[in-house]
Image (cartoon, rainbow, N blue to C red; front, side, top):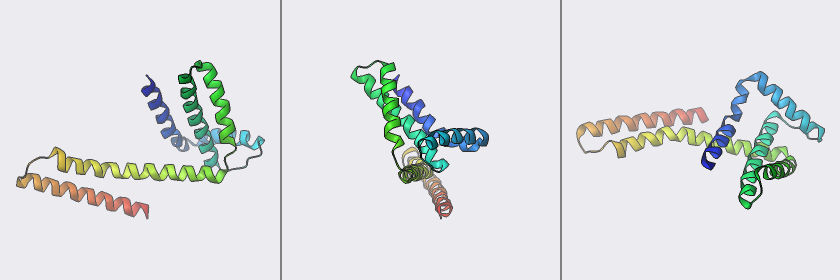
Length: 158
């Protein structure tokens, strides 16, 4: 049950940037979050606001799970963890939040780019057994496809 909750929460955090695609919902969400942070005297970019909200959700979730394992009820743990998350994340500077976002984006872009290549190499050397000429030709074609994909990713990065 805990794995399901964590999986759904991580999917929420991974899909949170997809709000950018829905302009109206994203704009109203960011405007509301910026009004809230603006009342605290924090003027920042929409990216920093989005990262701030995502980090508040992440820290609140982790603290809720931790405090519920300590022995507090879910309601009490949720209230305490939300307050602690807001207090701890609200004081982070915008430059640090943008650094966290760029590191997160870089990590996941390399993972998403490297996954198809890793799958192709796995197929080449684990799933296709044998030393016949046909298996060597199939491996050569799959390695060529992996190299083309890697070249496309490198061109895309530059």
